[in-house]
Structures are given as C-alpha cells and as structure tokens.
Length: 248
Image (cartoon, rainbow, N blue to C red):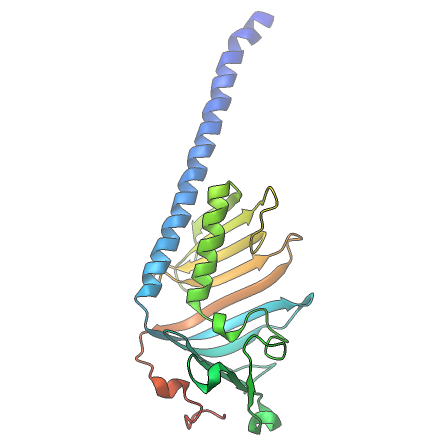
C-alpha cells in the first residue's frame, strides 16, 4: 500500500503542477483579452466626434443609494455636454456645460415651477456636486474608458486583478461582452472599486454599461447607455443656452 502511494505521488505532483500552469495560462489569456478590449474601446472612442444617448445613472452619495436617473445626453468633443432629465425624479431638469463658454460654468435649471430660474455654478462646487459623485466635466464615454484603463492596467501590472468572468451576453437587447473582475490591493495600493461589472457593446465597442462595488460589495455607481447614436453632426447650437428647444 505504501509503495503504491509512493509511486502515485510523482503523478499527483505532476497533475497539480500542470493544473496550476493551466490556471496561470488561462488567467494570463483573460488579462490579455481585457487589455485588448481596452485598446479597442480607445480606438472606437477616438473615431467619435459627437454622440447622443439615453444615459441611465445611479449613484451612492454620502452613504445613500439614490434613485436611478434617466437623461438625454448630447456630447461633442472636446468637451461640450447637454443633459435633459426625461423621467422622474428630476424630469424637466436641464444642464449645460461648454468648455470655454459661459465662464466655464455649469448652467442648470430644475423642471416644473423652478424652470424659470437658471443657475450658473462651478461644476465642481458643493452645490453642483450635492447629488452627484462626478462633475458634468467627467460625463461620457471618454472619462469612463480612461478610468478603466488606469485601474485595470495598474492592477494587472501589480498582480492585484482577479477575473471572475469574460463572456458574451446580451446587454439591454444588444450583443455585448461582459467582464467581471475584482481588485485585490496589496501594500497600501488603492483602486477606484473593489469589483466591477462592465458590458462592452460588440458593435460600438464602447462600455455601454458598468457597475462599481466597494469593499463591502455594495453598489456605489451604475451607469448605462441606450439608443447611442454616433457622429450625428452636432453643432454649437446643440450646446447654446439660447437654443429655442432649451429652457435656460
């Protein structure tokens, strides 16, 4: 019996070693896939001059998970943003930021009876940030892709990224690639989130859905984009407070 065990030990060690190598190879291949996706998203975004979409946003602010917001978003490079909330709780609210115009201030008015009052705010000031985790200057695909690149690339280099899944799965009715990964910081390193779930639209090659979770695995940001239309030919009029379709 002992002799049989001794004979089997090298086989077991070889099997375990081979399994470890296979897992390492698979993990390396998955990380390569993520980096490739990032490159493709960056290339796709580089070809964009402007876009329009329905932007869905839900954030945890000062510990409270706020209701989801549904917003018509117009974006034009280098940085012009128009938003109109099209569903409750802020239906009718409009926000406008055009870099280099309006003293680089955020123009905003609420819906309803407050529609006639337009505020001119520091986009990073306390009033503008009261119910937001990000200023309007960080809206859109570009900032999101840049953040993903910085965190994922650093975590891979540091050996702090653990990939749960990479799969093809429809997202909001469109073909997409889903990536779920965890950040496991060591030696005092920090990342934006502890876990993320990202949906990359296979046709647009853009991150049309992303959710971020904290160290308690609580959702603190969820964003998605639907009805995305690229390079529509948006003009300065789309980001002009005097646009007759707007209420500024």
